[in-house]
Image (cartoon, rainbow, N blue to C red; front, top):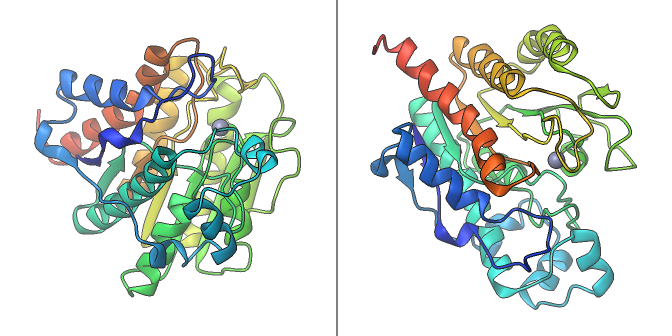
Length: 305
Ligand SMILES: [Zn+2]
């Protein structure tokens, strides 16, 4: 399984900052150590250029990012201190998602060991999300005529508000979000399908809802490519999640999505999105399941023991 990765995915933050930046290299090392990925599976993205970003983001917003003129209030809303390395990181990670999408279109499956920054709107960033990588990848592939229709399966515990807003008027992009009703963002946008969950939902209820909705979502959207935001902030004990999925429940969720999409031979792109477990190592471990399950599926499909 090919996966985009770049050392620049990690930028320095203060030790007390809640965003677990080191989960990116930790996940990469873990997948390599386990043999889920081999070194030649890693694809190295180049930072996206402005003309590609402008397919989704407003010129006024990109000007602020390029010139480092985000106000203090805008940086608070973003939840990350602005820096040149964060700007580079945002363009690298978005590029990684586009690269993964191109690879998935060619081979059926690929991932980005970052991405899923679904709280980024066309004109502003928030919730640790600067650029909307999925929206950029879809917009670019559509402009190139590579695809017409796409599906976003957003199972991060927080609603994919930026993605929903960006594609609200698009008939070609289907947005599906399962998320905590009372969690961030306070003001929900309108996805094509929103499934709201009460606080404290566990494995059985969560998996039942997903099983009930996902086949219809795939049927209605008839996608040429699907993006799976495999956020692990649904885990019990997550700092921001308020859900109660077990590790086995997360693994079952990942398997369910991968099987549903790949059984239909729809190209699949797997992205991290959020995860705020007690330690960065634990967060990386939970993120690893989606990649383990994807590789296991492909090996089963190819009848490799
Ligand atoms: Zn989240």
